[in-house]
Length: 175
Image 1 (cartoon, rainbow, N blue to C red):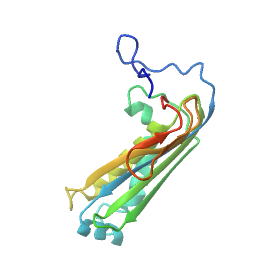
Image 2 (cartoon, helix red, strand yellow; image 1 turned 180 degrees about the vertical axis):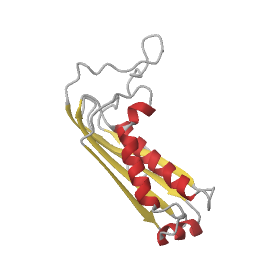
Image 3 (cartoon, rainbow, N blue to C red; image 1 turned 30 degrees about the vertical axis):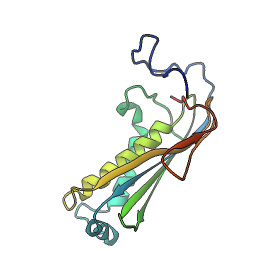
Image 4 (tube, rainbow, N blue to C red; image 1 turned 90 degrees about the vertical axis):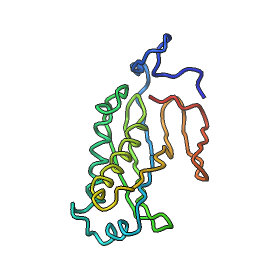
């Protein structure tokens, strides 16, 4: 772990990280989140009978749009050109039925795309909630996390798939 948070100056005030001297390189990030719901809501989603339309298609588009607008939502994020965004939403039949959302984002820039991937997952999850809340207000958005990243000075990162804690080859200070 780094000794210093990159978004704080020497006096502890918020600052945007200066990436002007950083080299442009290919950056990639993958994030995931889960949206749990009641079995009846899950069955409605499986059948495609939601009154507001195709829940998964709308959530996918919302996630893509959110990734492109991350710098407008997260105050200290840089606006960066994204070369690729993909979202995969799939149904998970389990004791607690859920939608698993996986976002992958790529760029060639001087800063990483972790926040864009996480934002895509978060907004896709919120869209699912919005489209199904009329039938299930107890829907739970959970476990939004970075699965992996590559590129940049901080090196590659891959989450430990066994639990929510992560293993990193190097410190992660990507901004």
